[in-house]
Amino acid sequence: MKMKMKCILALDDMPPVLSLIRSMLRTQYQVFPFTCADTAMEFLEQDDVVAIDCVLLDIDMPGISGIEVLRTLKSHPALRDVPVIMVTGNSDRDTVLKAIQAGAKDYIVKPFTEDILKKKIRSVLPKV
Picture 1: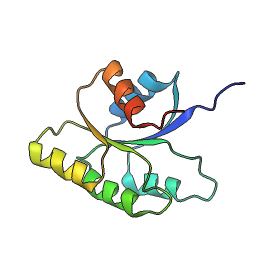
Picture 2 (picture 1 turned 90 degrees about the horizontal axis):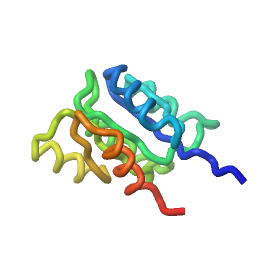
Picture 3 (picture 1 turned 180 degrees about the horizontal axis):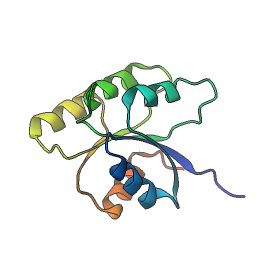
Picture 4 (picture 1 turned 60 degrees about the horizontal axis):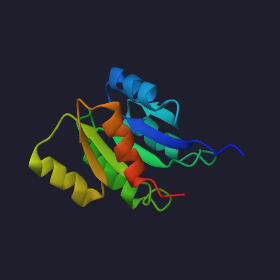
C-alpha cells in the first residue's frame, strides 16, 4: 500500500526560493508554494483544503511579517498544532527568539542545503 505524501506549505516572497524548496522536496513531499501571506491564509481556510503537515515560513516579507503569520497560524484552532519552521536570511538572535516564542518549532537560516531542510522537516513531523 502506497503511503500518502506529507504536505508542506511554503511561504516566501521570493519565487526562486520557493522553486528551490519544491525541487529539493518534490520526491518526498507535496509542496504548496505561496509568495503572499494573505493568499496562503485563504488557502488554509478553504473547506476542502488538504491537511498541511508542516509550514516553511519566511520572516522578512512585504506587508505582514512572518512572525505575525506564525501568530495567526498558532491562534487558529485547526492550524495551531501544525509545526512551523522559519526559513529566513535573518539570523539575528532576537528575531530567532521571537519566532520560537511565537511557536516556531525550528529555524533555518538561508542559504540552506537540501540535507538540512529535509532533516529539519523530519524532526518536526510526527513519527508514524
